[in-house]
Image (cartoon, rainbow, N blue to C red; front, side):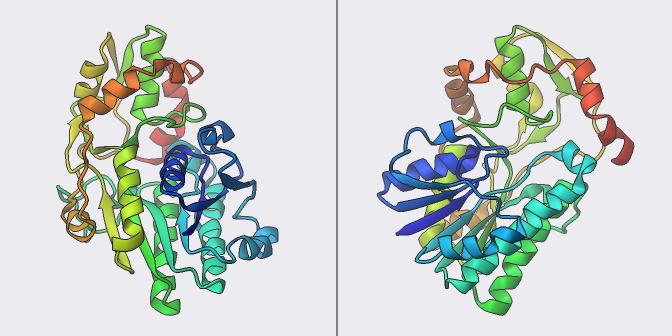
Length: 328
């Protein structure tokens, strides 16, 4: 099949591209490299078509329509994904995550794409959902990033309802694994901890560390995405997590080293665990990689975090200043 992946040079996108190429699909990658990196595609360069394009720009709408001609499947993974920068500059997040989604949807509709698969976010559930959280849980976005990803999902589902586009949406929980982004804003716990580990600095734990997250390895995510080509039901939303909650303290213990505690941030859930009954039932999928094994694989490649930002309590306080100001 001819498959197009937006954000294909990013963390999840590049891992997906590797698998699609392995399965002998014809792959086109759209990415403006604002957060993705060409080196993420080194394994398959020469076997794919790469196009540097900003899908959120109005001037590129005709080019998008042209690039989607003859495409069977679209995986829309392109987007901005940090919390604090979304508070600082919500317009950029709405442009990329909402307008960008609208533009790629319209191009897909015009070209009668067979299936459109969207990467949404479990951040839409807010700070205090029911646990384990299923897809029917109330939507309560706490910050512009979460809002923008949910608005993108609403567009996708609306295009299915009105224009009969075959769509499936996945709400990603805490995805980790190789090629996760190591630059930019303060964010994902693994990037923070592994950079501190390689520099022999204390691991900065937010709050008391007893808060839990549903960590899902990117290889498990990729398997679900590929299965959805044939098994994902149109108009349906799926939680994509492990169904297991893991405390930040346990992550720190597995990685090892000294610990230091920093203030808990407002607007963050104390727990996070996905109800994955629906995805198991529809896709006949289940996660295979345990958190301990996943971390052990990361630890074997610590050099990947050599150039990652080294976060200290002082730097974290400065980076999250707006978080404390607005998310009370």
